Amino acid sequence: MITTGNIPTNYKPYQNVNFCSNNIIGGGHIFAMGNVLPLLIGMGALPRIWLQAVSAPGSKEFVTIVADSKPTHPAVNVAIYGGKIIISVQGRTVLVAEAKEEQFAVVSEVDFRPLGLNVFGNSSNLSLGGMQLSHNTFSGVGVAFGLGA
Image 1 (cartoon, rainbow, N blue to C red):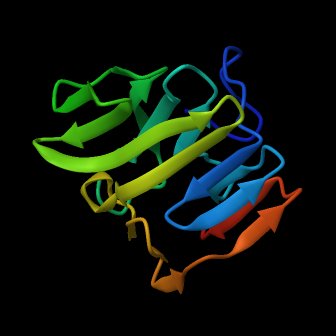
Image 2: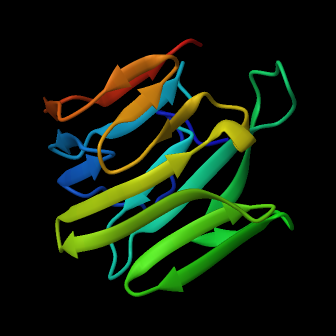
């Protein structure tokens, strides 16, 4: 399980990530569930993705389904189209990300509901645990969005 104290050694964060219109500046993590980091977006020619899902409904345990942009579960597909990395679960898109510059990545679509997380959004806004967020900037934070433990 990827946590704030257990981050992959080959992960290097972008200095600027636009996550569904919200800017995270300074290499902070996008969101955490307690100390679990369900999503990491690392620097690369294409963003390097680590993605976790809730292991079972109602559980607080997570299982890695994408590690360094490679699927680790048979229901997960990782595809590359036009410079974008697209991750889907059972045919449903859960993440679309692209590198715009060496230190800048954009996540234009996210839907983690199939992963057991109430997180979804597009290039205009983000719904995170029932909260609507749009065009915010977070700078120098360890974690931009903290959700329940």
